[in-house]
Length: 449
Image (cartoon, rainbow, N blue to C red; front, side):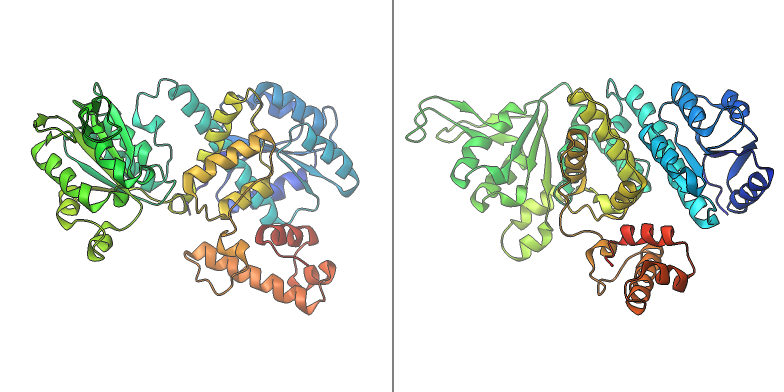
């Protein structure tokens, strides 16, 4: 069994509860320590401790709310989970307002207790990683500060870009809209041998077709009616540096042949000129489509495709970096909070679960926009194409064991609700789960009564 990262401190004055809860966590592989009072646990709390505190509210001496207040003075972002009896719910709600991570009502089903602890530990891990990133990324002098993430695909992307940055070869970046192709291009330039030169971007899709050639190669005075002065094109501006051609699939075929010649000979001729100009530059091209298919349709030159398709880097979509979603979101929240001179909001478990299940069709760009909306307190504008669990499209084929299990669970809940006429109490009894857990699962899966 893989041992979860982090430690759990359980604070309760009732020995039976401490013993039972400890056994529950240890059976799942968690490291756990129990304390009979709040005073006992406080000396073990530190700002950099990787763990969470689960505490009862009513205890002799310092109660759970006082413990929460004391912990927040030492470690403000440490998750504290409040356990409460039924009559203490108003007190627990007050604790949430004062910064508690969550509250759970006794008696607590073991699986729900584990789920809350797991999410709290993940939040703590992300907070500590963000803090470390923030300290390390101030100068943005290494690639980990630019391409953030701990997932295997993020690590592999950093490794590939680091290696290619030191080789003076043209690169083709492939990826969906919003995955960070321009960021990857900047990294190839900034960490390479041409970092002293200019990084010159050109979005081929944003320039009218009749102006692309002039933008790239420049023009001489009088080359056409409005050419009143000489203009230096993007390729010349990239002398000694890097030319980044974004959305290269949008480049007109008539210009592609001239770009191919420039890449092969490293010489250009300005529009309206008759002199060859040598330029030392590197090209990084980016596309969101399969250029080989575009070649087959006659929309892209085959010779230019093969000229570019030597060093090829696929930028993964965010849905393939699920382990990085919350890390990236917390990082963007911190950056946006700094930008707008405010506090980064604390995400509740429901919101965290929603973001983890979301498909992120807009990739990192969409995630960044969501972070800005959260910091500004604006309504979230998530795309309609949510993950299968939230879309209601049961005919979609889920990928991954966890997704299939959750989809099966969603169907079970929907059928039980239908059998019991939408009654929450009867449905919970039918499924043999607490009513509160049923409510939380319905929220997660977007199920309406």
